[in-house]
Image (cartoon, rainbow, N blue to C red; front, top):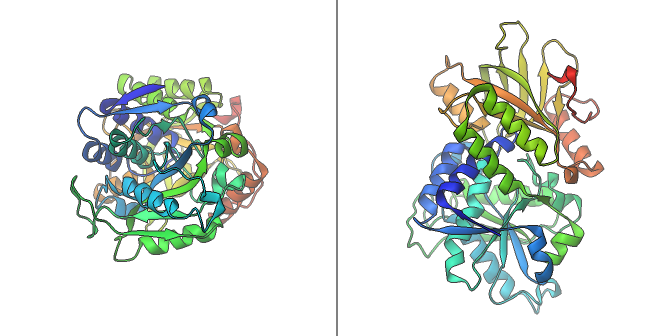
Amino acid sequence: MFAMRKKEMKTAVAGACVLASGGGGSYQVACDIVEQGIPYGARVTLVGLDELSNQSAGWLVASANMGAPDALFKTANPHAPAHAIQAMEATLQGMGAANPRFAHFPERGFSWVLPIEVGAINTASPLTVAAQLGPSRAGGLPIIDADAAGRSIPTLSLTVFAANGIVISPAVVASEGLHPGAWHCAAKRYNSGVIWVDDEMAAEDAIIGLVNTAAFGGIAGLAIYPMTAFELLERTPPVAGTLCLALEIGQVLESYRGVERAERVASCIRQAGRASEVIWHGRVREVVQAEGGVDVGRIVLEDATGSDVLFTIYNENENVYAMRSDRDTPCVLGPDSICYVTAGDDPLAIDNSDLNRLYEKAPDTRLELFVLAAQAASEMRTPVIIDNFAAVNRSLGYGGAYRPWSSTPSAS
C-alpha cells in the first residue's frame, strides 16, 4: 500500500506516457486533468494485487476517458470519469433482482478502480476518480497497481479482460456536465448512457457512437468491466505493477537527459521483467496523421548518426509496428511496444497526438527522440491477443507473422 500525492501523480503520468507505445492520450492534456481534477493536498492510495486476495467479494471497475484525440485537446473533462463510475454504481445497485450477476453488488459501491490501459490520460483518469470519490467513502477508493494491457491499445479487444472472457457490459459513459466543454467542481448534473453489449468490438462501436452525439461532444468518461476481486485474480490476472513502474520511469525523466535518460528507462522496464532496449536515436522528419474517431498514420525519424536510413513507425492511435528503410521486415510488432523517450525537458513526454499537433504548428521542428522497444507483458503474449494485433497490423499494411521482439545485437 502506497499513498501517492499530486506531484507524484504528475510524475507517474509522464512515465505512463512513455509506456503507452505512442498512444494513451496527450501528456499535456493528462497534466491538465491532474491539475484541474485533483484537489490540492489530495492523496490516492495505491494497492497491489496481493492486497485484494483477502477481500475477494469486493467489486472493482476499469476507468478511462473516451474520445477522439482531437476532441481530448478541447476540454480536459477532469470529472467525467468519476461521473461514469457513479452512474454505473447507481445502475448496478438497482439490478439485483433482474440480473443475478449483480445480486450482491454492495450498497457502498466499488471498492477499487484501475486503469484500463497504461497511458497519460488513462492513467490520469482513474487517479482523479480515486481522488474525487475516495474521501467520501469509508476506506476510500484505492487504485489498483495494475492494468489490462501493460501499454496503450488501439481497441478494447486487445485487453487481457477481453482475451479471458470477462464481460465488458455494462459500459457507462458520462459527460463533465450537461453541456459539453463546460465544467466546474460543484457540478452535480451530467449526461450519461448505459450500454449493454457484451462483444468488445460491438460495444466499442456503440460507445464511440454515443460519445460522438451532441450530448457528449466527442469525449466522455468511461467505466467498464465491473467485476469482483475474485474474478480479477482468478479469471484474468492483469499486468501487475504498471503504476509503480510508470512512477519510476517518470522520476527518471525528471532526473536525467539525453541517452542516459533513455538507457535508464529501458533498464526500469527490464527490471520489471520485460526485455527493453534503445533501438533508434534520431529526429522526427515527418508526421502523417488522419484524424477522426481513430487517428491512423506514421512517424518518420531520421538517423542521428547521419546515415540515409529512415525509421518509420505505423500507428492506429498507438504505435503498432516499426520499419527500418534498410530492412524488409518490421523491427517491432505489436503487442510488443514502441516507446518514445524525449532527449530534453520540452516536452518531458510525448504521444502521437502531441507530435501531430506540434508538427501541424511547426512543420520544421526536428524533435530529438530515442525509440525503445519493450517486450509485451507475459499476460499479453497469448494467441488471442497476438491474433487480434495481427489484424491491426494488416489494416496498416503489414500482413506478415508476428515475431516476438527480443534484445539482440541486430535489433539496434
